[in-house]
Image (cartoon, rainbow, N blue to C red; front, side, top):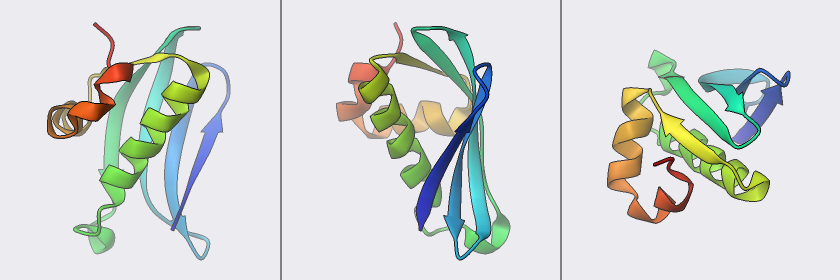
Amino acid sequence: MDIVRKDNGKKGVFMAMEDDAQMGEMTYVWVNDERIIIDHTEVYPRYEGKGIGKSMFLEAVEFARRKEIQIIPLCPFAKSMFRRIPEAGDVLAD
């Protein structure tokens, strides 16, 4: 599985891909140059239970670290992942 990121400067998406099949997506919007809002996470039903959502979340965290930005988690899944993975808290917006 690969996590592919697409970004148009205003919105972006992390897509979980395998053999040209999309398995899920995590969407975000830019607030400013320092913050993104994760607003939706979806894993397609046939791929549920395989850790795909967590993989996309971890990729978003690594992206935030590389860009030195913060994440505002409006999506319930992203909020829960920040609670479950405290070491990701360095990119959680105050």
